[in-house]
Image (cartoon, rainbow, N blue to C red; front, side, top):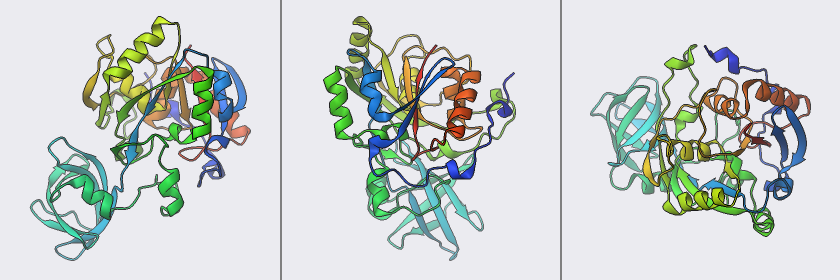
Length: 338
């Protein structure tokens, strides 16, 4: 039985990247083929892929999901939007000295009022007036991960978005995509690597710790996704020519594998609650480009399922010993599925 302790490791604090490098594609890349490790750079990606491979990216865009305000009693509140439901209801984390009561109102950013509908587990259900996305984008603030110690700056507004971000809805960036710049994409195209897109809106739950020792008891948060028919067709064509499907990030992998849970990849939209741990049967993705992940996180469990638990442990030890930069603004791995 796998437990939380199987996915723990000690990371020196100085290995956590607090800011991006001057150039997106300047990051280092640890290439992993089973137990074999090779130190490369992101700019080597065209040489590491083959003509006919298909690179699938998540085109979600990070919204200004952090908002501050006051309760009608005068107390301060902080809201971090988790997701916007299909009916327009906002699901959010809420911090306050005392929890607000259902039916009460909050004044956010001294601009507009919202109604507290009630609790939903560790999240809150909120009713925004009008278009929630528009209000959040206009008055909210860019949410950086909790391990980044500075408030979002103008530079973060650009660098905490991928260059192919277009569908608004995430509260955290699909960070493997942050390494791509126009020159790298052009080099991949010249190499003969094709590209396709999916959308998965990353929720604030991605930073929630796993609170159970027995992983079988953990329940994933929900995230909205879309797989276009064009992407399904591109993957079928890639398979037909003997190419590999390369997922840019764990969000892309979760989207594709969710859409193929019944054995066949299907286009469409839905909500993913897929929790990937060792033993999971991957049906779509052959190669994964991903950043380094937090100890005891569901993302570390996912990459351990994909690359092998012992192999990932060894790779992380190597990365720490060789001064790789970790987490959202850090370096990356290219993991080949055994």
